[in-house]
Image (cartoon, rainbow, N blue to C red; front, side, top):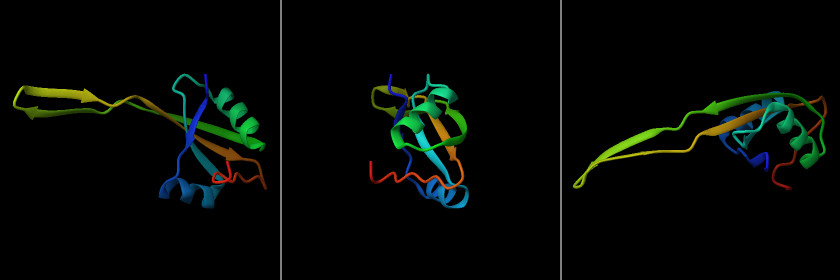
Length: 95
């Protein structure tokens, strides 16, 4: 099971990185905080101070078509905010 799926690159994620030194990652929904911490430390070679996780519920969408009501949903997502120790930096674009 791969724990980290990809880093999140958005305006809000970049703002958190500049302000607090926190990095955002999209992670496997079955991974816990300890697994996320170990994966980031092994992948980027940094010391992780704190990990916060959040789970986004699937979004349900529906639309009317000629064949009736079409209902669908997106997948469940899990996001991790990783705070690094003092002086540690991750260069996301290098990897």
